[in-house]
Length: 103
Image (tube, rainbow, N blue to C red; front, top):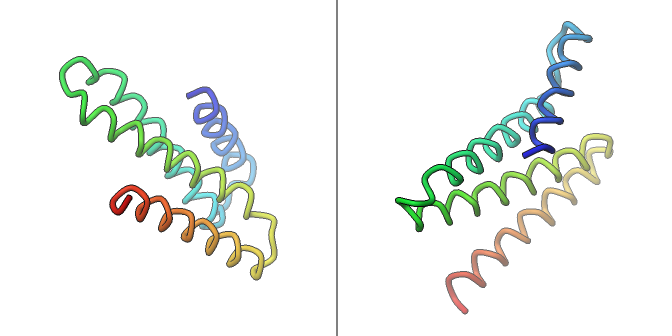
C-alpha cells in the first residue's frame, strides 16, 4: 500500500507542477494504482465475512500492481519497445489464464 500511496502523491505533485494535461500513460498508471489500493483496502476489511471475494480482490490488486509497474517501466521506451513490452505482458496474462483454467 505504501508504494501505491507514494506513487499517487508523486503523480499528483507532477500534475500540479506541470499545470497541463499529463500523457495517457500517466492517467492509466494512476488508474492502475487506484485499482490496486482499493482492491487491497476492500480485501482487508471484507475478509472475515467474504473469504472468496477477498481472495479475488487480492488477485485483482496483484494484477493491477503489475500493470502499474509495466506502465512505469514502459513510459520512457520508444514506441517499438512499448509494443514489445505490452505484448510480453499480454502473453504473460494469457499464460496465467491458461494455466489457471486448463491445468
